Length: 287
Ligand code: SAM
Image (cartoon, rainbow, N blue to C red; front, side, top):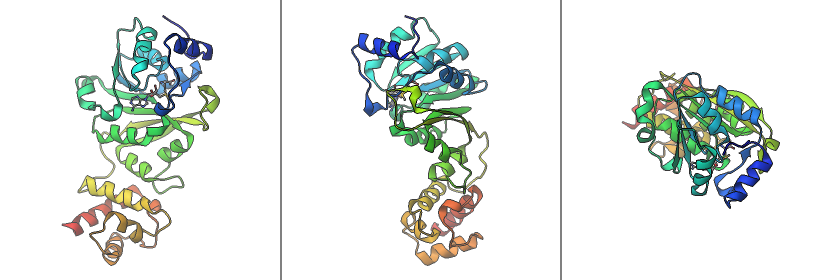
């Protein structure tokens, strides 16, 4: 069955045919604009052979990806969509649909065979779980070339802010360690069905082959980042106390000072290099 999966009437007809409804709990807001779908498929990576698509939905983007890349592995949590995808992706023998929750999927087991040809991610992510999915992908240590995702506009601002900048959050600093995020374009809410309350944007993260900083202990680096943003209104020693209860406020103030950082600063203003220096000083203090 080859139909226009971006056409709202077709989307409703396909769903009715299969007796399914939009599931809010899975963040099912489907794209209805063919131009946007093509632009995402076109720009999501440069030359990877394999694309991991998270949440194919009815398969509109999967089809565009299958036309452009050697293989597409599409992971969909909703069992009810699997027979639909069998229909809508019929004849595309370079697509594999896996019925699984991406959060419970072993990324190396799924994609390990394709590393040599390069692997990128392309996804219109469900809003309810954007950050956990992104963190799962980067923390898997799988050598992705690019991770391109459609997210809520405000999340896109966070992901693409400079570390220490106005929209910086823990996710900004954590992601900057793994890759460089770039906002490609905005997508208004009225291009989805059902229509979400917020606008979206497409963000492409080019994954670093070499990390921009090398902390002594990665776990302490991420603990430092997380704690620094935990209490945004507080100064750095107070924020750090939430993540490093082993150390007193005075210890923390001295450690911060020893890195040449003003202890009156707020965590959200630190640069990636300062996070690394601070986490190394904390690592040494905890020995
Ligand atoms: N790709 C389609 C599009 O652009 O129209 C659908 C995107 S819709 C925003 C998100 C999709 O992700 C849905 O198909 C939903 O069922 C699926 N999904 C939600 N949570 C998931 C998870 N944890 N693992 C895999 N797929 C998930």
